[in-house]
Image 1 (spheres, rainbow, N blue to C red):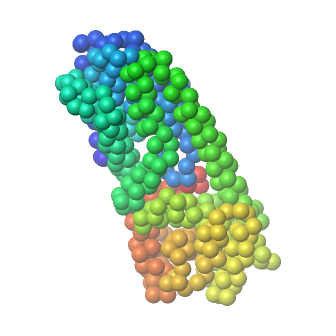
Image 2 (image 1 turned 120 degrees about the vertical axis):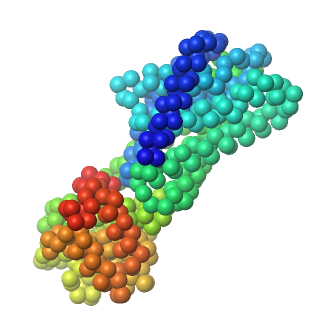
Image 3 (image 1 turned 90 degrees about the vertical axis):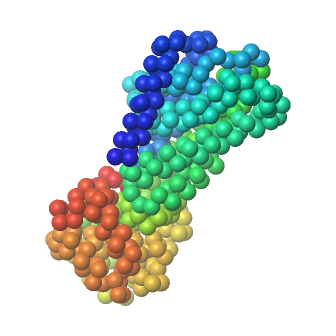
Amino acid sequence: MLIRSVHAAAVALSLAALARTAWHGVAQPQVALAYGLLIAVGEAARRRRPTTGPGDRQTAPVGAAGALSYALLGEIGGRPTAHCAPQVVAVVLAATLAGAVGRPPTRDHLARRLLTTGFAALCFQPLHHSGVLDRWPGHGPAYAFVLLLVLALTTLFDAVLAAVLTRARTGGPYGPVLRDELRALAGIGTAICATGAVMALAVGVAGLWALPVFCLPLLLTQLSFHRYTAVRATYHQTIASLARSTEIAGHTPAGHARRVAALSRAAGRELGLSETDLTVLEYAALMHDIGQLSLLDPVPAGATEPLPPEQRRRIALLGGAVVRQTGVPSDVAVVVERQADPYREQPLAARVVRTVNAYEDLVGRTGCGPLCALERLRLDTAHEHDPQVVAALARVLARGGGGGGAEPGRGRGGPGPDQG
């Protein structure tokens, strides 16, 4: 319902903006066309950022900076502008859809773009048209400060909106999700805001020729960012392929590591882990059984929970040694190595992987349903499993989370093979 409300707000804003623009006409059409072309080109260069979670990440920094610049535009070559906030939304909508022909953006991406741009335009354009900015701050340094203040409010609004959408889709507490969105602003979000403000100021002095000049640095940043995300995607695929080695060797059932990774990530998000900690958790969950490659005879059904503590600890230490040779962060190896320790001595990520792995072993090995497996985990909370982790896992399964989509008692309830 929350997601539909956000989408409905974006639709209502778009319809109102289109109706107002159609009724009164497009003010300064050459300016609208120039910005529309810039936003369309930026949207055409958009790429989806590979993620390991269900949240959607799409990068179109040139288009986003162009939309912010148009929303904060008060002058063109020393002459005042005449467009209003509804026209800004209408131009951004048309340009975004035109640049996304054949590769439409997701609803969340489009809703965020429209609502964020509309927020910035509604904060700035009424002040500009009322003459308040001419009386104060005028055209001195304080004018740039006003633009930066509007940008700060806009980025905060966008972070809150993104966190609301992510929280509604993935569950878990809202605070850590918002914290991750605010941390993300220190990256390319800062470059987008700075470029949008600089373009608005430059166009006010030099005219529309300033648009391509000031977009070039951001375009280079976008290319570097795409290369970085491609490396990250390849890195994740390499770890996933390495995790499949236990399946190929017959030590674990097919898809076991991926199911544990997806469900561990969902449970970690429910416990409020940050995005960085969730990545460590997922990598450790993918590789938690790699120590079984040292065994001469595979464990029946790959289930390590019934093994004696000494053998489980040996498998965990061997797995950690293998992980350290792969070049992944040492935090991942620590989580793998601590799988067999008493849960009160384990880091939180190790507790999550151990509990989710035990749940998967119970469901897959004994054939009992999710409710039965959860009940057995609850009975072991005195020594084997953290009660908070078991409760978080139960909440995820109750929502059909982790990719399985099944509620406890209605099927396996584990994550699908292509999630995470």
